[in-house]
Image (tube, rainbow, N blue to C red; front, top):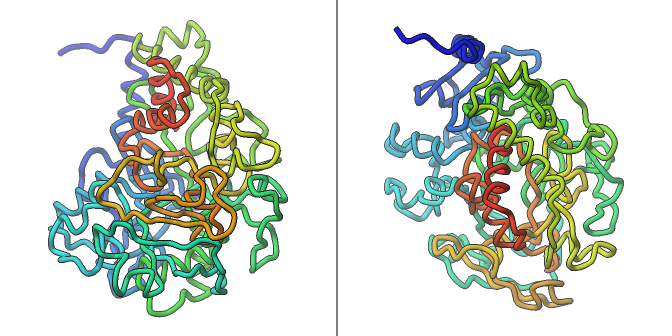
Length: 499
């Protein structure tokens, strides 16, 4: 029998306790997937392993009996529930790995692959894997938007651009699904339903990216954060629920007030983040103060933050005391120091941000403007933007986006002022916020996401452009010619792996 080195015992015992904790699910087990209507109890603490460690989901006031709960029960004829696309193991989003696993287990019969949006187009043969390639390979769902543009309250908006379909590989921007029929189909990743108190926090009384007042919540008259949906088509939880109910769940009736209340109550009580790193150990140990419990116990403060620099919870890993270092392997020590360096690179390494609508088109910022990642990813502990409004990073728009033959390509022509960076004619895979605002200047703009739980929900960006965390760093390097060293790139990847 081989004995563990003395300094490894605390970590080994910690792993044993973790494996025995209530709700812990390791590896590829059947109960990793939460199917609609199972009636399982959602524990107050639920752990799932992934490639980089262990993700923890906390439910305030849990455990929660899911039987009869509208988040976990199928509410429409396609058999889906909210949990179908917002899985606890995937940081309340959906990973490509989970989608592929469900396809293999069910032969493509899981409600996840419902024709309406879980396939590339409802007109395709649904039994074929290739008809669901965008979901299985990029984690994308079809999002159908009205054309011409309609606001969240259904009122028509007169756009200052025209749109033409240049390429339609899936057939969902032609005929009964095309602009001529009043529809446009784009493809996007599901956003996490967790840590909501931060996403709903309003950082400014106006939109600093546009320079005008925030839209007011139609229910309570308060300013909206603008951080819920990729294109900001629904500004509060009620509107988001109703949008999801009618589109993704295929509900024939509206959610009742009682259902909406239960859904909102649940969504405000769920917190998720990485808890344990395979390479570095627990993220709330050795001077680090990360993990979902900190998210749960903290509160958004001034400007939507808690007054601390983003990712400063890893400052304790910069200089680890000798007594703590003695309990770590050299590899664990090196990893923790790498994470701390990554946080500093994230905050401090500046570069020129150019031709980015929502940043450079804003009066006062200039084009280019020199800043770091925290210029936009600035909310303490979350990494989304405390300033409401959308930004165009180029992830969906040529010439910056990768050339993808399996996505529709649109030609947008500005009929009023040209776009501030692209000119009068724009080629894009997803017009983004422009399909909500009707403004050509908003083409390609997407709402920034929280960075929590990244290890559990690959791929990344709204269209799945980056397959892994290194792909995220590489895209920013290509887009802005930042000049990261290989060490800095790895430090950033290690940082994102523990969030």
